[in-house]
Image 1 (cartoon, one colour):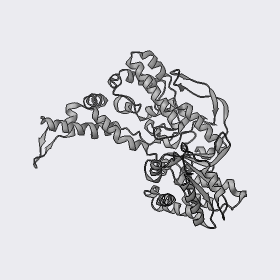
Image 2 (cartoon, one colour; image 1 turned 90 degrees about the vertical axis):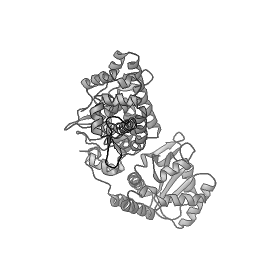
Image 3 (spheres, one colour; image 1 turned 180 degrees about the horizontal axis):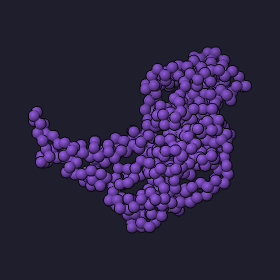
Image 4 (cartoon, rainbow, N blue to C red; image 1 turned 90 degrees about the horizontal axis):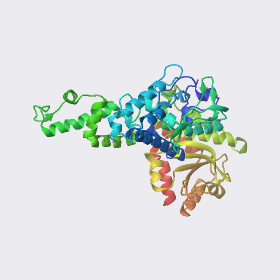
Length: 478
């Protein structure tokens, strides 16, 4: 049974910002440190800082011979069963990182040539360069390091969806970057029959880590060594019938060997290869799992676009259905615009609570319209105001939304309503708002939402170019 079912949330994975895990078994995805880098919110920055601080401190201890301290810190890493992520079969039980394997991590790191020579710079590098450390171990270590932000995320989700929290639950180890130490206290958690529950943002999980040791070895290191051998005209070079030189990868493996020790040795000799590999992986780490992958991993369903749209359209215009309308719009847009927009916040407070925004999204786009927007206009956050009425939508509604804008938060928003008496007149008002440098606002009525859903269904790959959005922004600025 998934979290959404257990707590009766009434949404599927497509409209949920967290991984909708099974409350007892594991879902075969991992927290990726490189994926955390793509989360440009304050929460994401905190997670990145914690990961970098812990890993740099461990390497410093090892490189200065303080192995006892390093071992104690690594040995404190717990089994993060509460996320229900990983490769366990049956009940979650920390497949990768337990008391014994935590000690093994210290052993491998303390004896690692890559650690001693400065070749390791990121936690995910260990997948390539440290024997015995695999994707699931890196994920478990990351979970421990960012446990405090994950607890806050879980509590925010619980508040949003009315998930009951139990007081006085032991947190598990949390990293204190000031004291350079683990600490544990008590906090509020959702508790299922399987124990405490720690929810994880879908944006930071992957089916595999960005770094793959076999890919790096075969397609980068060996390919580079082929060029080295050919340039040296070594004994490994064969001349083909057409006169071209060739060195087989089998011959290279026989000469240099395989395994992580070989990878370390050859990477030290040719460090530019690792730099190139990491550059090539930058974009891969930024692309979250799509709806299809998440559905397959969690055992859920892919988005039901027609139902999501119908839930919006079926709302009766007027104040009586305004709350239902707002929630339905959020469910639709969260599915429709993911992964470019994510981390939706409902009734987000600004100005010390004096103003509220119906829905706020973090702009995480690496391509498409929202990526273009972020390069030309302040839009780290995207704001949505929902007006469950048709007829005249006028200056007060525009002023309400533009009043939420700021250069730091963003100056782009969507005003979602049912219909317009005179849509062209409203677009003129949006142009006036843009001309006065009060922000860019796109209005979406029921017809626009129908068109967006049709576009997503008919062209899922090209959808995020959002030509309609781009054309409307261009019109605002013309």
